[in-house]
Length: 462
Image (cartoon, rainbow, N blue to C red; front, side, top):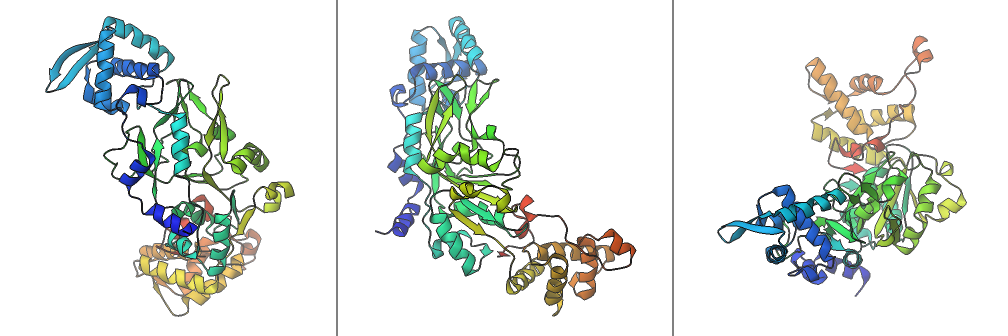
């Protein structure tokens, strides 16, 4: 069986089959959790202290542990005089902490306030991540499917395919507004299957929060027989830009709750991490690559707890770097030798420009006369020198704005093009004072908004 056949077979695996394959069913006993008993005991104590009067169902939902397992914990804690049964509602216990239990809960709360889902073990986390690695094996067919809402010429497609298949990071570069971000954020579509993400991971008795609802796109329906400490999600896609700092690549300790927050690349495991505006961060490109020399090469990362304990986690991440800066300003030969796959994303062709203008104008209800496209191309080239995929959408927005102001139907013709481009392009002050036509190109970049190239229509052409 070929690699592409294996990839298609894996995508065909149902959510239920994934759970069965990975063996992540709800544990029935504390010993099956793979984490210290004392940690589970403390979670129950803290949760009971926070809720006051509670019951088995509530504890089960809050701690992501099965009702039968919670029931066993309650029985054991009753024997220790930490919990008392206050009554029953149907077949469910109503419980509360005894004085002894409250004292012990206060002691635990001084150390850590976390009382959410129980963590999975580090060993289990490594195993599951290793079993659902991101498929980086594409051909032209699978790549076209991944970029189905974009129109890419064959030349660029055939450069992107091998670059995605290659190990290591992918480097996209070129002028502003050519669609690098739109391409980068869609790389995760090469594997449209779902993966399991742990809510948290236990390391040396500490809790590391991994699941992040701002990053992880949860599946609409969770498998019935899934261990609730795991969440079925679409493959992660983490996108960061100039705000990225080196601290985001290491564990951060929350002094309020007493838990650790996973770094971005750990949240992106089994998925894609896009670093947009590469080179505009407060740290240098060399600093980033020096931090990731081992992860990119060996696919493992090393993190440290605040008291010095280091541990190994998987680095199953396809890193995509995107920049509109001159590559020669980002690093030397040694720098680029570490990133083997580099693809330039340039301006679009006349045919592509005409096609995208027609689609965007139709979507926005703007009529075009027969000469509009050629005239717009000529004027845009006179100002900027090349064609960018965002231009048709921007122009059509201004045409609609002018029509709204005038109370007329939006029509893209020569007079309207001249009017909107006078609004759109900046003017040289000295030339304006001399009575000449506006010149220059605005300092703008569609890279600031990953979807700006497609906001005005369903398809963007490259």
